[in-house]
Picture 1 (cartoon, helix red, strand yellow):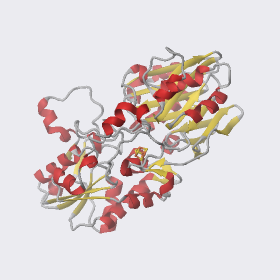
Picture 2 (spheres, protein in one colour):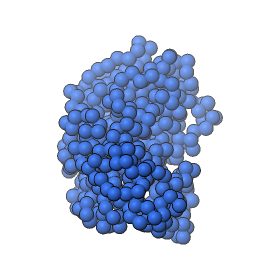
Picture 3 (cartoon, protein in one colour):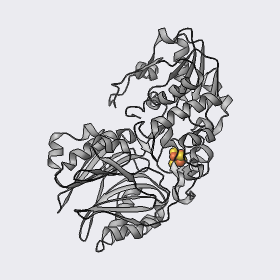
Length: 478
Ligand code: SF4
């Protein structure tokens, strides 16, 4: 997996597929602005949320054009493509596939036609009753394999009525996580599931409006944060401004993992900067798992804020003991066997003169399978570290996520079957400490009852129906 800036620790080892973000979504309604370029830059800011495909849909009032392809935002679009995408409203999407395979057909935005025009849609999250929803469609309505295609087809099904009315009727029947941006030829829509699992924010431009997965994407296009789209809210944006409609009672359960790893550090959630939360998590980690050591180092970049907090709280100096190759992008060249064996060194290399002879605290954000952390411990010892103490700024990830983050099945999660002591042994570390779930929750300043914490405690706030998620649940139960 490739992660954007600030998200590099889990893609270090090709064998260690870390948490994969679901997607980033962006929408803009702004007559007189270059909406396709605004969307391009919005997606660019959200690249860390999905790197498999990218797409933009645009309309100038009479027809919707969609351009999408496999690859990073900067690989899919160039000046000439963006130059053909003209209009006054647009939506965009960058994708990591959590359902359906990673093929062009499943790239987003999706586009369906209705009796009165088109409907383009971009989705962040994962639906858990796709099978049930698909039954409501006429056979052959859609060939796509994703929950998003089924949702788009449902919204477009009765094309004679306004999309807003169709959405108000269809969305209450949809279960799972969804932050949506969608559009017809004239109007931009956005909606968030009643639990508000994935983020979605509204921002104001001088001459229009923007909707995005994270506040960082508003910043990059010069939009001013207005508010979060509420869980269970549908908004409509056109020349009459922003209209809000509630389609379900809000039962907020925001994803706790957004704070740990998914969101950019320069994003704010519920009014608090993610970076500040991560630093506080590091302080709490030091309070819960102190150790006598000479140097605190992060696994760059995702471990950095928590390492800073750990160093501040413990009084142990902070330093960079691992150097990241900032220019490692998605490579389509398969590494040779020799390079593959070096694995992690493609992306991280220890600073021998810094770590030699030191007792180190290495701070990382999470452990999924453990391959990356095992390789880091080994590499630091080989570079001369006398002790390696691993500290993790999230509790053990023991349960899979059904709401849009593809960690792994339970059988693949190292904490799904091993105790902390056993994991420590498996990593070859001198000690291992995970922050407690209460400690992490407190650092977010959000009450526990308003968070989804299922990957840590197994309590799924949106009940999982085995028939609907089929194979994945069965694997997860192994
Ligand atoms: S299970 Fe974990 S990753 Fe998934 S939504 Fe809940 S907290 Fe987030």
